[in-house]
Length: 257
Image (cartoon, rainbow, N blue to C red; front, side, top):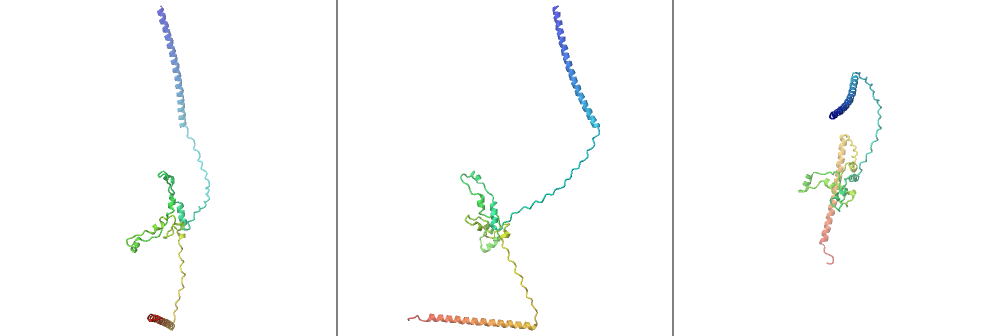
């Protein structure tokens, strides 16, 4: 009897436990079903809203608003930039070239050769003429003067390096050196042409007047010729007298003989 009671009690506890589990699972299922129904209702409302939006007529187009056309404000003309005056002399043109000559950095050289800093490039640049042209001739002409030798052109001598002792104002003034911008000022203006001489109008004279003028010219020439002959005769007589005196002095004995 006791064993029967124990088995009945065990069965009752099992049944109670199963009923509890079933109750819990039912509650879980109900809650999940409620969540799914809520999602379905949301989805249906969204779909219905989209369908209504598609069926609804499109809104009327908005009126185009034309942009306001602002009047163009013309900028005041800028004043013309003042250009630097060209160099008036060859020395000024060379000075401008030397001031713009590229410089070198002495510190870069120190890294290569320690304990020595050379002069910058501008120092050596002032010893030459960086720009300028000098008129030169064909070197074949020099061969005709001095055979077997071809001299350097004037461009070489006009722009070659000068010694530091040369004065700056006389370094590059020879061989016709010219620099662009200073050519018009350095070149001397050509002399003005001579005024036209009035042409003597030849008048036609009569035959008698032409004969008289010709005769007067012949008489004047004859007088001039006779005067020249007389001068030559006098000079010859003086020369003969001088030679005779010299010969007589050579032939005479010295005094005291």
